Length: 134
Image (cartoon, rainbow, N blue to C red):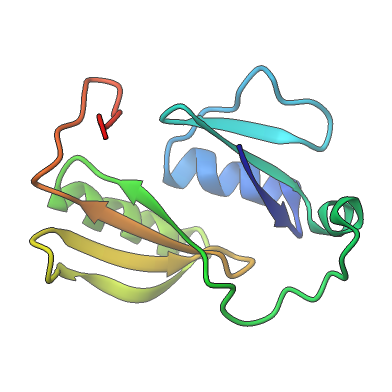
């Protein structure tokens, strides 16, 4: 499970359910919203509360050295998702393009600055549920 500290929980729930079509898990409770992302739990939680829980200051600044990847089923889906991201307030940091490893990807920052890559990898097969067998 991974958790993102967010500044506006409802805004994020709308952002991810609309842009990436993620569904909220019935394991979500109160201020903890969980998405099942291909077998990985990705939780959203108020950033101040998450920092307090970890006993660290909330000084979310600059590049954290972490990015997340959303694996699309086609190049067209990459473009569609990035277009939706922009409409919902995300910032495209790298437009989609053919990349050195043979796939197609672009990057965006969500409203709090977390970096996501939206990628299509023609060398990986997905099942009907969008899961990749690593």
